[in-house]
Image (cartoon, rainbow, N blue to C red; front, side, top):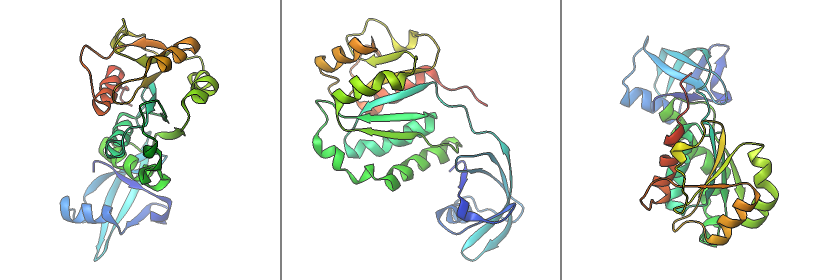
Length: 239
């Protein structure tokens, strides 16, 4: 935990918060804080800053907080990703949070099993839990917005152009002649398929509307490797 995320319910005064959950346990037992120590804090969806330990209670930690720093810059890629299998989804969510992706669109494709859409990990509270883990690691306060699209063709035909909003749309595919690393350094949308990749119909439909084919290198990658590989092509600038 490189940043203690603060929630509305933590505030007990204008500049004081009281933590009584796993965050307090982390500060007390892992960081071994004492009164006067400073820790990095941030308000969920808002500013970052410093919290100074002013009191250690038997079941909590009280911090005096000064928030004055903007959250990190967003990644310039929004991501359209075929819904991965549940055991991979939690890692994927942490990854997009750590990279500072603004929007993640989870879509259905021919190679996505229908059962994936029934995963408890798609419940809002589980999505938030996984995103928070990534935000705490990367010292971010702004969570990626997760969009669920359980039908491929309506998503591509009715939503994709709107989502791109004039930005380039790159679809990762082994047959691409151009590397994602070589595309213009502008805000874009990147589409990544499931294990086994998009089927030809899916690639062709996306290309007919807006997408341009790119590759991520000469090796076949698993989804949880392909995603950070794509995002690492365009790391956000520090703020």
